[in-house]
Length: 214
Length: 83
Image (cartoon, rainbow over all chains, first blue to last red; front, side, top):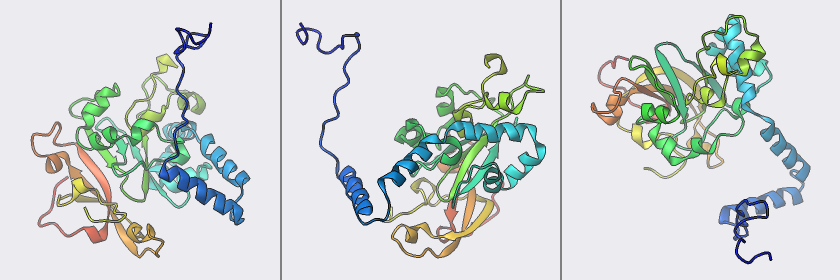
């Protein structure tokens, strides 16, 4: 008796997700048309496009976590990172290409937080693809106006005397936050430290995991 | 808002900030967006006070916003602006 009374639920009891068989938007059609033309004219191949998508999907926040953990444990690297983050991370194999990277170090007195009010600029070479909320109008408009309220919604409450420094990626720079190293991690290995570094802690909307939770 | 690919956000226009660091020269994105050769321009990282952007009643007036602004959008301010 399929389809009689319970057709909004699958046999396993989960709701069906509606099919996405709506017409393509103008820009979806444009993307397909341009891609097919580029392949047809021999400018690129479907294999190259898939390889690039794979490369983009392979970048994850673990790249950024490795950079942060090294900055916590290697003073010379930390100095190089703060002086020229593009060069320092390129030396670790995380090339940002033609863009430029600035590392923002959190201290007892200052907490950094990154937004792109104009679009969705993000250090993809270190953090992978941005989360949906990073691209939302709510985050983009509120981060520069009421950052402490936004941080509180992410579960981050700072002391009043800690200055919040919001960084709007308006042009050619990309930003990665170097969160404060959690207390109680003396003597930890770089790999163990990297496991504490979350994506949000490198955007500035979170803090690293507590060593007790690791 | 002028038309085109402008990287100067509306909420900073007419506001006074101070120079955090100087970057560039980098090609002007307003030209690059149209397939033109971008003229190299200084790119300035400016720091603004929340109070200067949103008024003294804002949540935390001493917090700051930094942004990169191309030099042709800037003019010297009248007096020094303390951090």
